[in-house]
Amino acid sequence: MRFDVLTLFPEFVQQSMATGVVGRALERELVSLHCWNPRDYATDNYRTIDHRPYGGGPGMVFLIEPLKDALLAAQAKQIARAPVVLMSPQGRAFDQNLARDWALLPAITLVCGRYEGIDQRFIDRYIDEHVSLGDFVLSGGEIAALAMMDAVTRLLPGVLHTEASSQQDSFMDGLLDCPHFTRPDVAPEGTVPAVLLSGNHALIATWRRQQSLGRTWRLRPDLLAKVSLSKRDQTLLAAYIAEHRSKIGVQ
Image 1: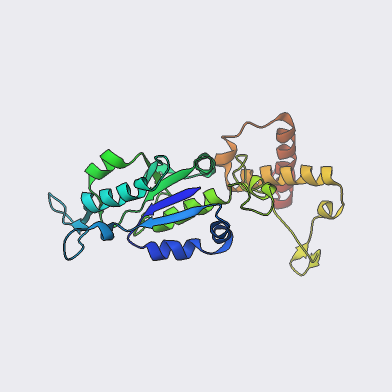
Image 2: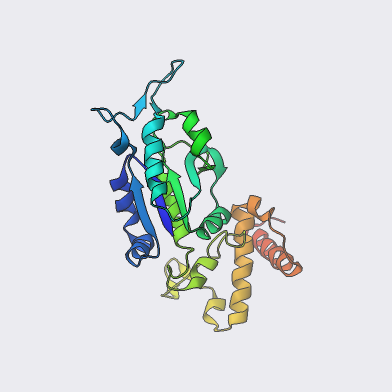
């Protein structure tokens, strides 16, 4: 998969992407990263890429031309036109479903804004989709773009050591992940649940499913409301809720 990123800070994006799972994917050429700095396409001696907003007000606004020329340069290198996505708090919230959709694409272009905003005419003409990392404002779109590229990259075939790793992540089936344990089985902080030491894979799978349901019920009930539960899931969840309430003394 090919990522094209329009950013004033290409070194920051490149260095951040060079580590961990994504870094290994880049080394193995499972993904490629191409950064395009709009400042390289400014035409005046000061390499100006912003100006004061018409109508007055605080901050500066990204000029159309440098962004447009950077975008056209990126698109000239793409085999087929990729969707152009603006990192924006006004966009739809990025989630695992969108990450899965993007992972099916051959390429995507991410535009990282700065300053007070981007000239609306560039947005209206060239942006296909607005996507947000959440209901808060960052100094620029780079951190959001990095998070999204990481989420997409780990879903690509061959990136993780086992395909099951990504399939068991939180949100993949609409629920949170179950808790995980490793050695030692007994520690001052507690013991590993006996079922995980039993060797009974069917019981382990049932326990993990119940924990996933229960954890979602406790921590993210909004997610649970969106999931269609089977009768078996409903039974497992009811048992989890009853046990949880018993532990905390609630009827």
